[in-house]
Each structure stands twice: as structure tokens, then as C-alpha cells.
Amino acid sequence: MKFLEYTPFDSINLFLDNLDLGDCTIRGNLEAFSCKHTGNDRRLSISLEHEILDCLGKSSDSDHSSPVEHLSCRSSRKTLIYLVLTLSHMYPDYDFSAVRAHLFFKEEEWESFREMIDTYLSEASQQWAATNDGTSLLDSMTNVIDEVIKIRESDIYSYNPDQDGDPFLEKGVM
Image (cartoon, rainbow, N blue to C red; front, side, top):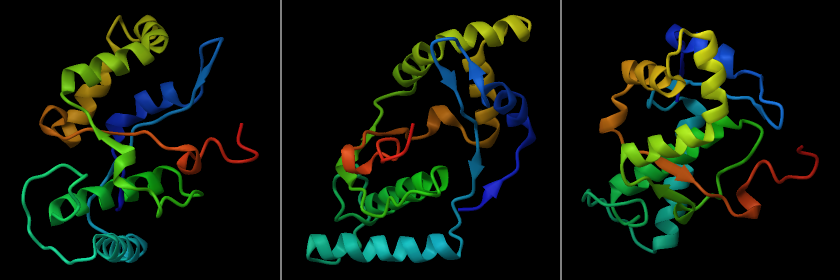
């Protein structure tokens, strides 16, 4: 995956870089990546593909539409590999190569996911609105993301790690 410079993200990233909300601090950003594998991604992708096929005990190249849990389908294996590669790019100091499909959950629909994000970012949204002529943080984020991908037409996955797969539970992480 190749990082893509996309300047419309800059104002939101500047806002989310180190947002002090009193009880908590948000450090986040929006990033865009191409789905084309780079050298390291290609090696990890091939390795994960072989590992998945070894676990299945067979090689299936059927390409039926299916969720990630059905890894006998090539499209599902590909989705899992993209999710693992995305995590690896988000947290480059952590090894996600052992992450399994059952730790990813496909969000049912955009509107319920949007409501969840809006709840998490409610305090941040108030600060954003105060400094951005009353505009909504979530609407601003959605608009710039829609310029890169059509978010309402995309599959959205959540990662719910077990204790061994959470980079924030490692010794020394605060």
C-alpha cells in the first residue's frame, strides 16, 4: 500500500493531531493509501495467503461474494489481507501478521457506524464547530473522505483485538 498525499485532510488532521479535551486527548488523523502492494506489502500478502491456505488445508480460488469468515473464497482472503496490511501501516512498530479473521467485524451499515463515531467524537465536534463556523466535524470528515472513496458504498470493518493482538496493551505503552 502506498501512502497518498491528500491536502484536503490537512485541516482535520491538524485539528485531531493533539486535541486536549480535558479528561482525554485525541491523537488521530485521516490518511489515504492505494491498494497497490509495495515490496514489503507484497511479501506479507503472499505469506498471509499461504498461511491461510495452509490453515484451510486446501487451495480454493473460488471467488464467491462472502464475508471475511469464509476464507475459502479468494475475495475473502484478499479482504483479510488488506485489513492486516492497513493495520500494519497504521501501527508500523507492531506485527499484525498473526491477526485472524474473527477479530474483524463488518459494520452493518454506514448510518449506524456514523452514529457510533459521532458519539465518540461528540466533545471534539463541539470544539470543531466553535472554530469552524458551526460546521459538523463528522460531516467535514465524511466530505473529504468521499473525495477519495465513496464511503457510503464501501464496506467498513472494525478491529476488535484480543489481548495478544492489541498494540496498546504491550508492556511500556501508555
